[in-house]
Image (cartoon, rainbow over all chains, first blue to last red; front, side, top):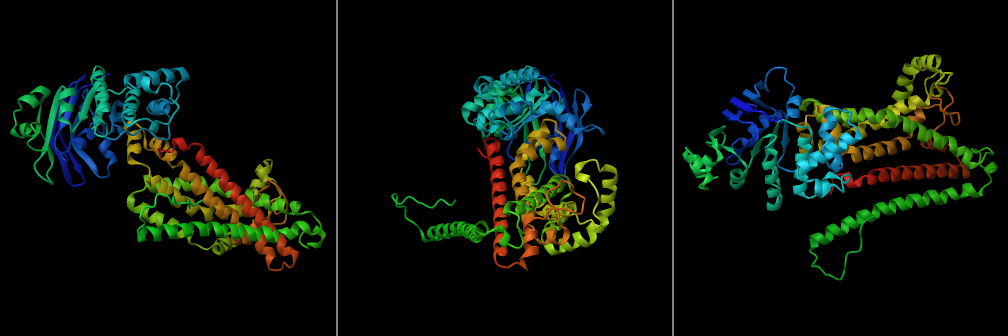
Length: 259
Length: 315
């Protein structure tokens, strides 16, 4: 299920403003890759280009290539809807659908993809996805309750369950723990560790301990100044980035001298 | 109901600004209740003579009991408003969705402005348009429908020669309630949290699927409220119906014939000028019925919205 991502010379623009410039990197399957860097350096903008979610923002466009197992997401005729079914996403703030029950939330994506699903298949999928998101034991007795009625950490795991229910190849996480307390954060980090056996995971985080705990590879982004595009400064094994980076600015950032 | 009783025990230090504000809020809340109670009291008191007087002494009734006089009017009111709503709500939701989620921003603004403008057209103008333009223009369609689809009870013949049928009145009503429903729905749809829209899109929803999973469920209470406001206007609309509808008949499902039930509000307007004595009380009593209908309709709407409060996203 897991796939390799290759980004080649990607620029991202908001209208005429170049937000991110010249990104080239490879992300291996069944690995966790963390994007770190100061606020406004373009890491959230960049992660959104990996499933074309940036197109939701008016005026946003890209120049360059993103290849998933060799096929370019930005080739003419590629439907962004199909891209997003292949590349799932979890957001900064937990966003279960408040009008749906926990069960309906898990099934929301599947119901879009194939309309007919027998009751028992649906039950299986709900259980499998919630177990996959380490949430089953906490919610199994209240599957019909609203998705917004559980705690923030549980909501975020529900969103992960919803994302993996459609069996994507890649899972993007945009600061998935920034709205959560430390215990819920730990639960999500444990989950990421388990999920990487099946999915390619890309995570944006502001928390450098988190990046060093969960990721195999880390990419450091930086921005030269306000109004300048964000750039990929260094991309290497997480242990190298945190112990022996080759760029001075990376070292300054991970050691807390700035940012 | 305004929550009046502030706990006096705690004795918080009230600043002048707080006092003025809570006082004026309380006054406003009380005022609206007082006005409502006053209207209800007036309607009830003025209606009493209708019950106590022999129906033979009320000219308009012409010997028939009160309820058999009111029944066709109640039916006509509900029937015409229901048809109007049935036509207006889907169109309104469509326009609102187009403005909020499909149209380019500049077009959306212009369109929203035009819709608001439509709400400001006086009902007399709609009445003139309905009676003098729409009715003659649509009459051939009515004839065609009764000829070819007359076996459906709704389209039973013979078709009205003037086109001034209850369906015409309902179309006029639908056009009149369209702006308010559209404007409210648009506001509600624009309030859909971007997070929920992105959640749907990230699951691989098309734009329509995103609207179905995120926008419409979130906006459901708003759509119902907007429809009820529109229904309220349709139920109480007087001039437009009075000018369009030729009312002479009783309760019938047929939409296209020349014998149509009237509506309460239009009936009051048409009869009031020449009413005298207990006839006035009779008309006011029908007004009381309309008042009651509106209350019941609103209560039903509240109940529908409250039923799924848990899932409203307010928690």
